[in-house]
Length: 259
Image (cartoon, rainbow, N blue to C red; front, top):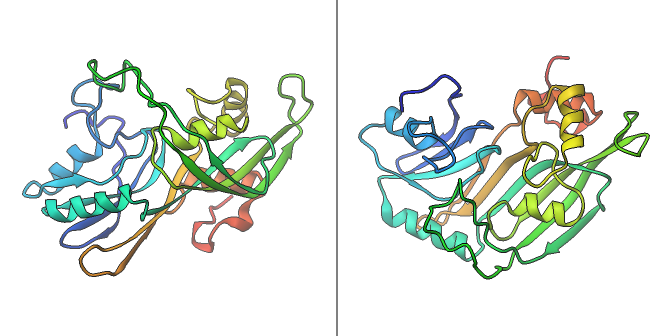
């Protein structure tokens, strides 16, 4: 990894002999990808620089635009395979926060199968472009809502919700696609969202990113039986935005920014 111009190093949330949890900044790739030029900075390359003697196994992925907690196993392929099985059995609990357009229902479950995305930039050129839809389940709970005196389209005001999301499955862009299915797309989503709302947040709040944050992940350690629970703090700019939207009461005391 040689080009570090735009690379923001992750925060180490937890590490022991075999498990490493990081707080991935928004805009950083997890591993080398077809969507980026060769030698684009990414977490896997950064880990190889920091721990040159270690081998890291990726347990799950976060989209480049998503920030938050991500967990790796190092130097233990057998443990990585066991935790992969936990993901397959839906025994890993993941929590995200996101900001969506409109006032979403207080709570609900989205059970809507998603067809695997064939992306000429992100997927291998030989990937099958015509796969059958796979089951996808997402639980959500509205944490707060706001009405802004800013016209959007034919509406004189703009409405948004802060949502806690717990995906039961792990399909590509699942949260983003499920929220679009409900007609509540994520703010900052340039693929599945709405440009006019993305522009509003850029122009009025200087937000240039996708507002999707992986806040927590937990699972039972396959060998010790210990509950492994990792939590990532919200980025400073996201905390500042929540204060601007009047949602500061939802921030832990340690995450209150100076305003």
